[in-house]
Structure formats: structure tokens, C-alpha cells
Image (tube, rainbow over all chains, first blue to last red; front, side, top):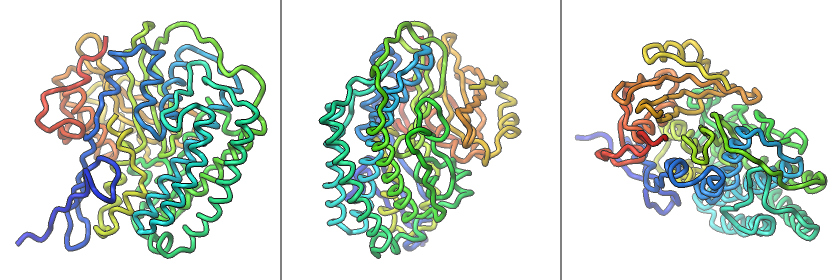
Length: 361
Length: 115
């Protein structure tokens, strides 16, 4: 008689909003094997970037890789081109770029925390966080013109300036979100459904985080000090109050706490930026065509996003390689599932905050 | 960014000597189609908590060559190896087709894609 059974989770599943399929091999309720299929929405963006679009249009193409972290995709690509062209960006444009990156991180983390609540059966908290997230979506629309998939980053700077009225609105909404997050902190620390239930579940040790090259909140929740904001000088993160957030438990609860602390730090950074945006132009003219190859990284909400770009001095690029956070984390995800109860799989998965749109670009 | 060319025969030994998993973060395995119907395969690393310190080990191969696996040294490389198999139609030891494409797909979208 067979001792194990295979149980699928996805590609369409009530507890899973992303098109990914996991096949769990289970012994009684325990997961002893994992196989994953991530190719349900592959769109061939990398090929399109070298066959259908000129280099100055690709920033808008790669913004479509993902609705949530569109700003990081277009910025990482654009920074690679700016590096190849030797372009100098104004301080004002750099500050505005950080502002949008951090607003993006706040709403993305709120989405993840909301899904974690939903998977814990805490529907009311899910609705509350999603409602509060609208405050961030509103100000993103105010600044960029779009709620998602913003065409805000331009080679040489950004496309829109802040005006006095929008600065005031952004400040008000950020202040309101900061108050709300203090309430979440209490729920995620003291509510049984959201804290004790998740302690020790889906844990990744520090050594495993190193071994599986974990990144983003997943790695930082295990104590691994990796954050691209700490490893690049394209943007002045050291001037706006960036502080790396880590935890040591490596479980679902630790990942929630890291995300909450990152939201608080991102709000602080946004407030500092709004209080000290330098004067000057938002864009500088950049001439020429890129030549050479480069690797550029930025910290997306889910972790390190990398672009490799190879150019030959013409308008069409030779290679655009996009390495996304979820793609990098799949080996660590698969390892974490081993030994867990099948019933915990949806909650563990939500705590990873996977993005299949990015992965199957 | 430092690029180091290595022969296909020596790539495993070079990475084994270089890779300290607590110092270096494995970014990804990358393929770049070259104009002469050859493929540049890159193993890209960044240093933890260092300012943009990137090291790329690379080999230039024919599409018929077999690329050795580094999964025993870098477990997370399995996903990049499978992507390379799907996208470029090359053989990587221990890495099956079917991550993005169907397992019986005859298409290799990025093979010979470069100008």
C-alpha cells in the first residue's frame, strides 16, 4: 500500500491568488516533498525587449512585468541604461524616485499582510488593511497619474513634479497610515490568530537563508542582512533615514513583523523626503545610445530585483535579463515547506508574498 | 563589475574555490546569445553588505555543449539552470525542461535571439 499521497495547491486555488502550482507529497498531514510549476503566465518580455522595442521605450514595457512593483522594474532598467550612457541625474529626481519606491513598498507590504490575515481566517482584518491601503494608492495616483503600472521613471529623471497641494495630501495620508500601522502592530503581536498561531511555522534558519540565497523580507526575517538599499549608491538612501529591519525567528510571524517595521521606516523616509526635496529640475537630457554591459539591482518590496543589460551602440539592445525576487526565492520556499503540516501551506505561502507575474515575465 | 572568463571544463573548480556562501550572494545564471551562434553563460555573484561588488564568471560555449551543474555547491542555482534549459535549449546537468515551457516544447525562445 502506498504510504504517501500527492496533494496539489494551485494553479487556481481559493487560498492562492497567483497562478502557480505546488505539488505536495504528503505522509499523513506532513509535507515531505515539493514540486512547483511557475510557467502559467509567461509573456516573453525579455525577448520583446531585444526584438520589438528600442532602448528608450523598454522602461515602459518592463513596468508592465508587474502591477505592484512596476516602479522598481522601470527604475532598475532605466538605471542600467543611465549607467551605460554615463548620465547624471539631479538630486531632486533621485529623491522623487526614492519616494515612489517606498510608497510602492508600503502598499505592497500592506497587501501581503492583508493576505496573511485572510489565510488565517481573519477576514475583517483583511478588509481593514485593504481599506487603509487605499490611502497609499490615492497618493500614488496623485503623484504619478496611475494607481498601478506607473509610467513615472524616465531616462534622465522622472516624468512629473510634486506640487504644493499634492505634498500636503501625501503628508496627511502618510500620517494616517502611520497611525493605522501602530494598530496592526498590536494585532500582529498579541492576537492569537495572527501571532502565536504563526510562531515557529514555516521557519527558515539563518544558515538556510544563506545556503538558499534568500532575499528580501524572507531573508531579513531570518537575520540575514541583505537589502539592496544598503548595497548601492545610485540613490541617496543614507540621507533619507533608511534603517535595515531584521528579525531572528525566521517564521511567518517574523516575516510579518519585518514587513510592519519596514512600512514604518518607509513612511519615515517618505516624510523626510517631502520635508527636504532639493530644488532643481526633475529630468536631465540624456543623449547617445547605450554601449557595453552592466548589472543593476534595486530592492523591490519582495527583495532584490536585478537587470542585466547588454547594448551595442544601436537603438536595439542585445540582451535584457530580468531576475525577479520571487524567482530567486523559489528554492528557499520549497525547502521551507518540507516538514510543515499541509493545513499550514496557504499561510506559509502567503507569508512568502510570491509574485508570479514577475516570475513568469 | 568584474568579469572572469573560464573554460567549461574548469568552471566548477573555479566557482568551488571562489564561492563562500556567507560572503557571496549568488544572483543568477544568465545566458547571452552571441552573434556567432555561440552562447555566453554567466554565473553572477554579489558580495553581502558591500557597495555594488559584482563578480561574473563566464564561459563561451556551443549550444551542443553540456553545462555542468553547480547545485551541489549552490542549491538555489537549480531554478536558474532550469530557466537556461527552457530559454536557450541547452543541456545543463540534472536540470529538466518545463519550468516555463511545456516539457515537450520544441521552442527555445532566446536561442540565437541576439543581433
